[in-house]
Length: 527
Image (tube, rainbow, N blue to C red):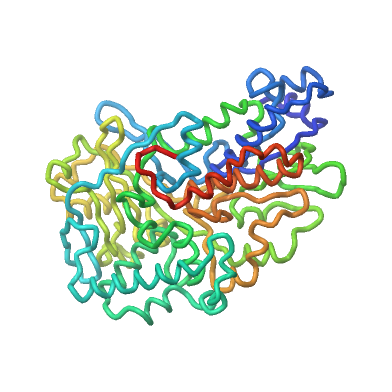
């Protein structure tokens, strides 16, 4: 959009401005635009030129009443789909969030709305496990290959976690009778007290590190139980099997969710490369949103879907409540370094392997890193059949300081250790350090440290006058995941729709999807 076109917006009063073009923000914009466009006012006094600028020709209905502002030059937030070289050309791979599951009804509904498809994560065959003893263990069951005592230890603590998680209400964990106690200790403290074998402890620590992008030392136990409760159990967070969080992949990549929504609401109603610097509510009739480039937009309501630590960079008039700032200080962002390796053929499948590796990284291989690079690996063969593996780094905060060429070399070396010489015969390698991503600064989620929930949970979703909050961290079901992001976008949109006219939400969409949550569907894709 040209400067002249953008300046024309300065006098337009929108119903809603959505700040943040990730899955949460675009879901909110989609819901708002779809509902409001069905209720266009025939007496709308905006000029024909303004209506056309607002999507009269490219948007939905007589004129889009929603403006989406994104700080980056792209949509997608914590999803990112990029081309990587494969045999005979290039193929799309996800370097950000990518997996969904059958109990994640909010994302399944949205994908059906958008005409997007998904397919099963490949899991057939044997897997590998390597703990601190350095041994590579091969196994085929859903349980890691541990000693009998280790399996008893792991099973016992998982049962205990699930029992405790059932006591934590997903909508408000403070209602749990043990909230104060569990929010005062870390997951690490709990595990040390309740586990007696090193191998079981290490297996669980790997899973937790990948889910949150941080260590158990930094997580409130109540927060961990809360996220398990919101997913229907601890196993659901880590499984690739039926009902697990890593059950399906999206054809064409996850970033297209946001991109397809942008097409539907009209590209003229989406501003890229426009970081918001000011949200001014001092005028009783409208809210003024100002970008760093000096663009001004007047609106009735605002949805902010940016990660909570990024919201701290926006000036609010009047100022945000102090509890919101205190909450942000206690919700640091995790860190993941993700990689894709492509091959000429999926040799692991031919060898009866699933492609899955779970590892503590192995011993140190280069200066500056306490472990080797590999923590988790999965089969990443695309729906078009392009062979690939996807994985995450162990000790990613250390490995991010290492040059990409060295990271590539060391990842391939470790793959050879597990898969043999064929693991080294690669076509291409790509990785993504999310700590360097502008307006994210980390991934996959803002975690909660001790005390965050019991002291400041009220500030997480409570609207600030005409500003409403979205983002996967504010979800009550599958928060931290794509589906949680969709739920929060729908919830924030419905909060505003109810303020405009309660009849606008009579379809009961959000309530219906929330009530289906955690109830597995019998048919793939059924909602």
